[in-house]
Amino acid sequence: MDARVLASLPMMEYQDQTRAAYDGVVELYASMFANRLEAQPFSRNMIATFAELVRETGNPRAADVGCGPGHLTAMLHDLGLDAFGLDLSPGMVDHARRAHPALRFDEARMEALPVEDSALGGVLAHYSMIHTPPGDLPALLAEQVRVLVPGGLLLVSFFATDGSEPVHFDHKVTSAYSWPVDRFAELLAGAGLVPFARLLHDPASERGFLDAHLLARLP
Image (tube, rainbow, N blue to C red):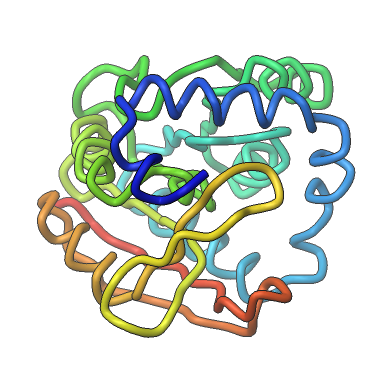
């Protein structure tokens, strides 16, 4: 879909399209990504650092927002967090529940998380905001700030690009955006977070985008 058309859609309409797209690839997606971090030491260690810092807040509750098949929720649990997964796609939630029956998974929209205010020590958003048009990202970040305790952590991962503006591209599942890292960090700051660590590493795809991870804290 053209970026201008996508950006003009109401949030619920493009989210419905994203949900349908992921519902259609559940088993394929799970088979491709469930063990992918085994070959991605940078991403794996950034998540481990996030988990360590969340534990240090004294509040180990953490949401894996956009959890997909639940593999990272399980990783957070293994790292000592009281982790649960949330996803827009009911198909992904069903798969996650079957794959990790001891953990909690619920269907949810990212702009309306089923979590009380100031309840979580951490939020993980691992490539889960890449399908959101740039104009709607502040609303999602505000919701993530709402559920964090003071001192809570957000780790957001995304595709990074050069230049000064986000770049629309045709993701293999549905339309997506890559972001200049500084611009995304500015969005985090605008939401009231303090970005304090970033990691960029080798291209994740044939498109040549870098993998980017930003770690931020709520004061």
